[in-house]
Image 1 (cartoon, one colour):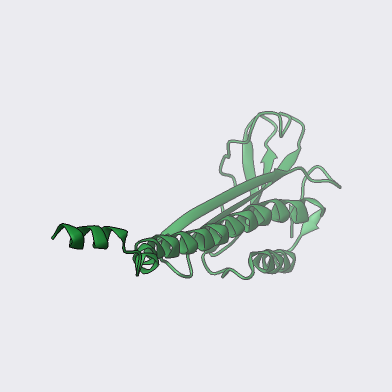
Image 2: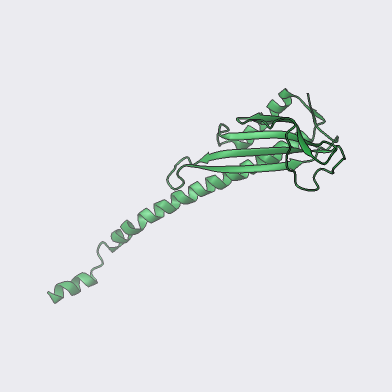
Length: 177
């Protein structure tokens, strides 16, 4: 009996197969996790790029129309590619100083979301709009419900958000016609 135990302890046949059977599931989960994490990071990078690009595009103009805003939203959807633009909720608003130190929405446009109410107040970080100056900022906000294409590690939606402020470049305010 002792010889049988010693012979089994020295045997190495099939050891690699047993080790592989233990490690393969862990390695497969790690692979899917790395793939899903890299896709999520790529999507988040695109969400932040959409916010900054939206504010930047609108802040370069003196006036924008509904067709201009439609073109801006089309460009923003192209930035999100290859991710679907359907879960992207984008709101672009012009925030102006009302002359009494209160920052209000002058106009707002949205895609897949509700635009801000004209005249509603918005808390803008200090120093962006000088009180009483008649100045403004363009605020771009995005919320994106990311779902993994493989759904092996990340199950369910992860909400990614971004916002960006930009001062108009060619005038004090950007008008909407």
